[in-house]
Length: 64
Image (tube, rainbow, N blue to C red; front, top):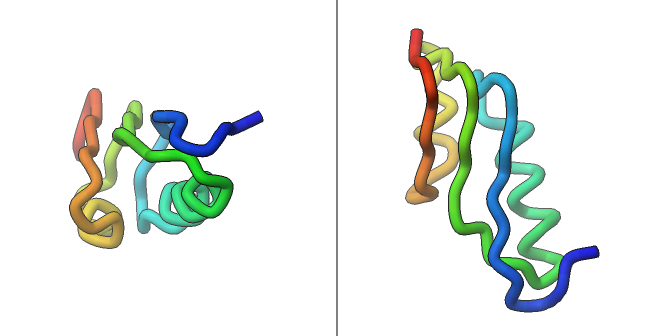
């Protein structure tokens, strides 16, 4: 359960187009949470997912 004002991080395996992370962030924010950042194992940089996420802090272990 997410509580209003709770700080959360989004964790995902691959950041490609950014759709999954963007949708997850919207759901969490609609529930009142504050998304503090995004971490992924692999970012497929050529697909532009990071740009879709706007000013969210994104950390990738590896970028291809």
